[in-house]
Image (cartoon, helix red, strand yellow):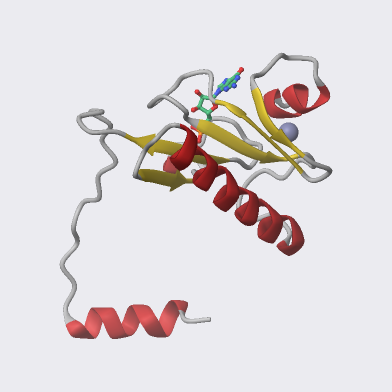
Length: 132
Ligand code: 5GP
Ligand code: ZN
């Protein structure tokens, strides 16, 4: 059985900070920084690719509210919002979740992007491929 479904069902304890009919938010067991929170839909979706529109809208709005609350209560000025979808992206629990990670001065957290330099043609090709 999925670990986050077990948390949602109350079979595995968690430090909950928010709950409604659709979603649940609790502290990540491994606090990347203090206040690191996970937001999950109660219904099981593997990842962003299978998440439905209504749930996605709701979860993003709750992510916004939780971020604002953390900013105020933990007195931080910044957060990273992160989702890993797929093993290659670092997803370890296959139940969709959003990470809210408060940022502090000198917190030593590294979220890095490498830089691929594309030509204008390559940018145009890419746009033509993936535009919606
Ligand atoms: P992912 O790598 O899939 O994006 O993130 C999974 C997250 O779940 C990790 O940050 C990990 O620390 C967290 N996690 C794993 N097991 C548990 C658990 O039993 N309880 C809680 N609260 N978090 C967990
Ligand atoms: Zn699940």
